[in-house]
Image (tube, rainbow, N blue to C red; front, side, top):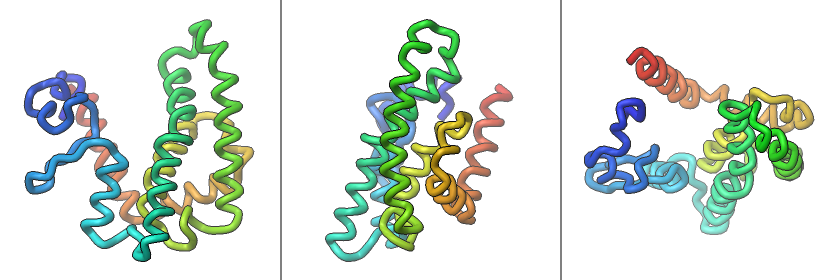
Length: 180
């Protein structure tokens, strides 16, 4: 789908996601939108990246929600300000509070990652995808310099062959969209 061509608001895409946003999938008739739901479903379906015991599955869900609801919000706002509104007076007033909140969230994440390689231990699981994507949004800033454990965690996530394959495909898609 091409947002530049307004395809996200056409009837075909709105049948997948009534909000007209990405991501959305149609997996043999099962239509899902929202990244957390999609990543969780694909982990469950594939039998990979999903912990087996019920307690570990609950912890995975907890970290997925933390990535999407607690960590991602202020980081997305920082990225949005920096990319689109850096010179606006309201943005200059808002950004310091967001950076302070980001530091609070990243401190907790850093503490967690000081005890383990990934969110649930030594094994990469689906909430790591969501958390790495959330934190990735502020790589253009100096905020992460304070958190070497988080930076090392991101590096471990990015080193995964499947991560590189996905982002290479994403980069090709974005470059193709920019050529339009």
